[in-house]
Image (tube, rainbow, N blue to C red; front, side, top):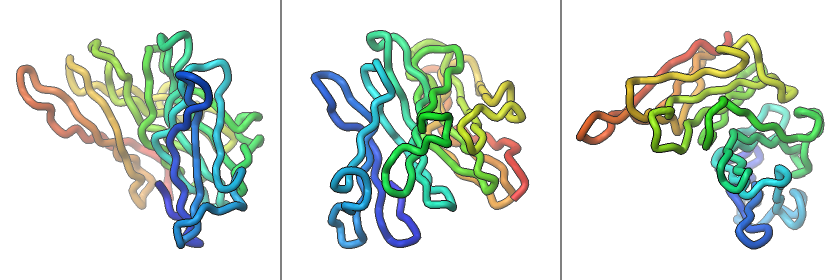
Length: 210
């Protein structure tokens, strides 16, 4: 959920499209709680990433120009593959085709079942996504990716626009984050301990100058 400067409220998630299939979903409300009919169709938008099984948005961020970025996951290949998924909308709810040509992009870290739980927009317009793999194997680490304002991976960030951070031999996961005033990125999540409850895990990354 995010609140615009004009008091309007944007909520993102997923909506059932056909049997067993879900799409990104967004709704915008006026400050009095009624749907904003100037957004999408009667205040609502659904977005299909293609021939995929499930498209689910977990987070949204507002750009300074009023555009809305939603991030989550897209699941395909009968549930075998799962990538970070991002969509950018104009203020009226239409897809912004200046973002990766279609308004949509997917990010693959080369492992299965990747979910973006947080999206952040830097002061320079670059977009950070934070998440982790939804897997029981030891492949789960903090995953961060950065896109340029036009939706391409930012090759100046990490390795080819992506960063993977391990806290140890077990499954780690990042499910939130914030931007500091100095442009640094803080990602938060968890790291397990053998035969015990997981610990809180925090990592800070160099982002951009404010």
